[in-house]
Amino acid sequence: MVGSIFLIYTIVSIVFNLVKKNYSKSLTVLVRSLILIIIYLVLLVGVSLFSKENILSLNQDKCFDEWCVSVQNVEKKSSGSSDSYKVTLKVSNKGRGRTQRPDHPHFYLQDSQGKNYEALLNEGRPLNDQIDAQTSFETYLIFELPKGIKGKLVLTEGGGPTLVIIGDEQSLFHKKTVFYLN
Image 1: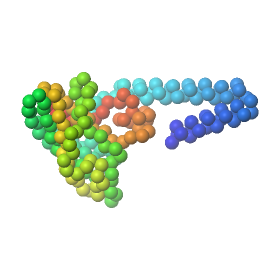
Image 2 (image 1 turned 90 degrees about the vertical axis):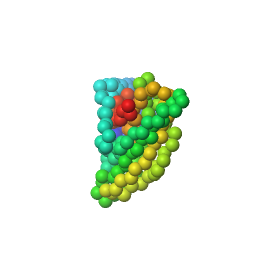
Image 3 (image 1 turned 60 degrees about the vertical axis):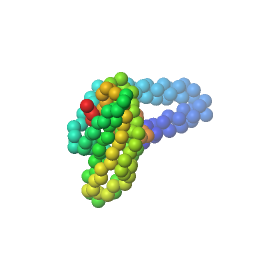
Image 4 (image 1 turned 90 degrees about the horizontal axis):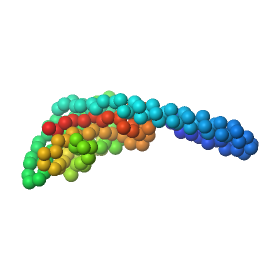
């Protein structure tokens, strides 16, 4: 919101000064705005680079406001050249009196080289299903990785402007909340 207001103010100010043929004032506003943007981006990346990975254990909630999820169980099956993981998740609403729906939940497996593996299947209720206050449900994600690859489940939620919010887990280069499978 503040960023949008800043951007609108900058554009209006530059256009206004250009119309008045006050080119030096337009250039001054542009340069000051660019300096502020660069400072913000340096802070955004700096905070993210110094963030630490948040490691969850079994049954430990990761909450996004009142909408929470925890890994309840992991079953591993090996066959041929791959390992299959069935991850049991408990989704709960810790809110008082309001139905919740997550904002773009995204869970994926990541190997030690940073390669991501999406779920092959979601058995049970969808992760983005509405959930009444003070209730929970279980759902299951099925992942397949090449045999012998160690993976971690990455838990994220949200989209849009969180990418450029300093300190937000979804911001550029920020470490994520994870659950190690093996």
